[in-house]
Length: 562
Image 1 (cartoon, rainbow, N blue to C red):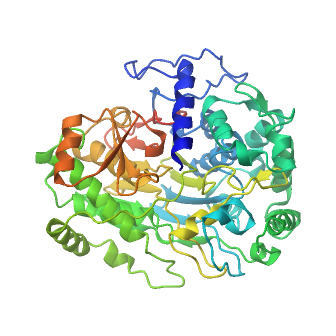
Image 2: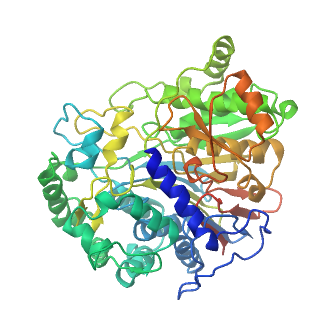
């Protein structure tokens, strides 16, 4: 992300302060809403402290109040965790077009309480069959920088395997918001303005975001009628429309006119993968996460394996101990950088069992103690959402779905749907022609005695750092989830300053300095910085059966109980 864009978003967030809850406000207090609630009673999305949600009959947390409410209403109507998570995800494709789209990806980790089994749906994007010689960052601005969309295939497959409600019911809120519209909230407007040079590059983009010749302002109603028509076709015709029919042809035509190589054959051959999750342990807990080529889950397991070898109880949490902060940051950087070389197990050997082993962790930590930190691999650009749902029967769904890059990077649309520049993830490991991309996503469930106690994930550059810090806060130090999400944290590598990690300014200066003396390098940024990810987590108390969640202040989300 270029510095000027980062500065703009920081200023936009400050301009939204009228709808931001002060840091000192009670976590249980209702947020101020000067702009007024929407007609459906949902609060205007805002940055800042959010209320805690607790219940025994189900809890939902997402980065959008509209998506959370849609999922909660589906649970109330009898749907399960899978139904609700998919409903939230496709609603976000309408409500959060700067973060996700039906031309992006979707992967889900699911726990079936009736059987005690975990399953993983890999809905990662494919590269086109035609090769992409000389692929470079400028390709993300045109048709060469796109992959085969996988969101819909994973949505449909997950619904068929684990869902209980009709697809039409899951899609109803998304279609309504697309056709009837919703008020543009400050974060969405900030992203629209930041991408002003691409969002209206085509007539299709102008029709949506500049219907009167200028960018729609905050508070204006954003209607996406062409997208509503497309969603209705999906609801009625499914993959026959998306992968074998009119949508595939329209998408390929737009992409090829913009210099790309995608063909309907690329669409027709796409399939999701049902996979066994990656597994590990941490201080008596079972850790279940996404397996390669969605390699964030193995990164979580690798990091926790190394942290388990440290006496964190003596050292203290990362906001109090420079030693903990240094080692946690360095360990996560190590897992992330090493993981940037991991490939697709379908085409190359990836020794997952060894990568996630205690033996490997012990050897790595010994070598790290002998050396200075190595350069951190660059992170993919931000642009994604995470959804976590627990239902009243104990089922758990945790989903990462994404635009895969900066919003509207290429300004291309097909039948009202933004075309994701998902080739941004090809820079980690370039897939073989027609191969599956290696993606940095990390749906995670942590269990004890066979029952989930923590289900979580995160979007953005700092997703790995975010999940690890909150996991340690909650499991090692017993910090309540509503306090954990508020604590200052460090984040991922700074795209504009290689060799540094984001860290929030309110993490105590003496702790930051102590970590620096050990070798950490920081890019100090604002409190509750959105690039540090948002913890879409639910904690399940094994003693009481009560689930608790609190939306992260770094985005505009909401947690709600049934």
